[in-house]
Image (cartoon, rainbow, N blue to C red):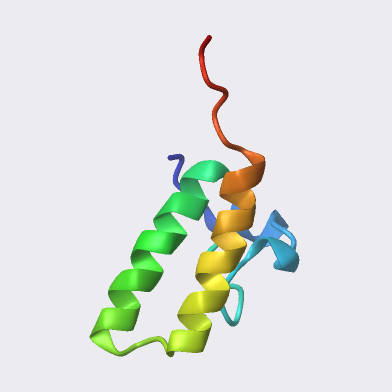
Length: 73
């Protein structure tokens, strides 16, 4: 996964973030996977509510469904 610079992050539209206040970017498959993992960690630490976690998981799942790797025949 490529690291996001501040300049690149600012160019990502707000709707491509899954969390509150433009947190958890899910603009591509790699970041969606990372968002799911980080949200789960933050939920366990008590830094996210279950509803925030559910929203992040759902947004990331949408991206993952759209970008699923094609199966080899």
